[in-house]
Length: 314
Ligand code: G3H
Ligand code: 13P
Ligand code: ZN
Image (tube, rainbow, N blue to C red):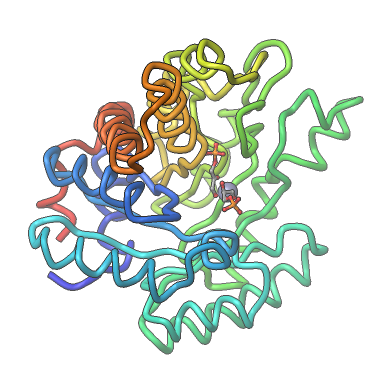
């Protein structure tokens, strides 16, 4: 099966109450770890590439790796997605490079400008059979942004604006701000999310797929290993997996995970370096890093509820 768009995946995820994992890839080992997990668990998959990933490894290398994964796993629907495209030109380049999905993130622009650039990307992408994700609202911890009630309103996605945005831009899915943020330090004290927003948006846009960014859980297992073996990541905190599972049952059809991959591979490499200080064969530490990613992704698929769902997404 060739690469697919996210259309069928989102239809099935919405209908059957699960979410598809969108994992960031930067090199071969990360990609293999993820793909081995979904192949064994028979789950649909979105592999996403950020601008930083493209700058690090180039689209052609990453696409070559992904194409091998697609060829070797006929029964797994795999979509390739540009994560946080910053302007029309970047999105156009990824469409031209053969990606099946792109994100235009113009969430920092004023509302009308966000609609305008999103619409331009939608027109170009749709003409080439590619689907588009956009973002409305500002990602970030509720407490970190918030001084008063008004500040919450400024950062979280406004449900009424979401309707206008989707109608005017023609976008296929929407990333919403509900208190999650990128990285390993998402909350200062306790996790606080505005998951009720998702329901409010879903009520106004029935059937429309939503996306959650910044959804790594920052697993204790890996933070403990990192801190034990010479790292320093005190106070790291992620989104509780119970919240992810809850969101996955709603209109949230795509959940973005990058930090948890980074933590898994870093933890394992640190462990190997500490336990075998004379080791200098990259395969001996990148291999365990890849295995850790595989195990972690298998676990995530359970959290998202998409284990065994590959078949229905084809
Ligand atoms: O959007 C955040 C992702 O984790 C990608 O991060 O731009 O460092 O590749 P990156
Ligand atoms: P995390 O940093 O929580 O993994 O989020 C990744 C993400 O949203 C990529 O777009
Ligand atoms: Zn993101």
